[in-house]
Image (cartoon, rainbow, N blue to C red):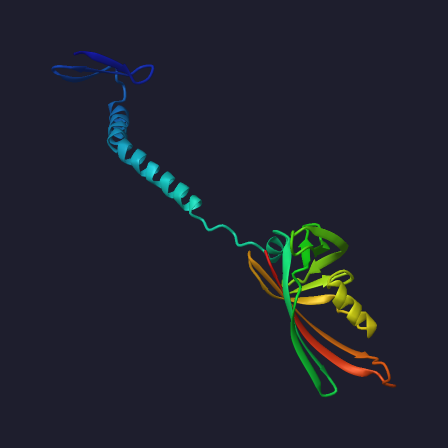
Length: 215
């Protein structure tokens, strides 16, 4: 079957049963190079197209398999309300040592993304929360410490009343011992001179305490 294809304004090519003929060709060498390039391109087009598809698939697969970024300390801290479990403390004063584990399941904490910490009272039977107080907080640059504007409302009513009797001030800075999606452990230390009834001079007191919370 005859076929004529235009190459440009002055050059045509035709295929016949007797061979290929060039019509009105003034620059055979130029046409030859063009035809040769076109033939090579057609031969390699499928290979190039296939390779391109493979590269696209690799890029898509790599992007979808990228590991999600790990949550920050603040992400974990603000993920939900933390329910008190217990506080483990050891007190040392002039040769006297006392260690106890006290339940704090009647308390709860909530850290918001806008740097507000809310202290709750919690009904252990119904789990209903009642806000006691709220303060501001900041996280240290190394994500190992929380600074709270005031600890008023943090402790249970009984513990707050007890330490107030002796004029003890709870430090506003506390260390993050452990934090996961399920558990928060805070650790602090108190070093203070306090006045005991009947004792004429202040007595040094050191207390180490750990507070455990769960989701």
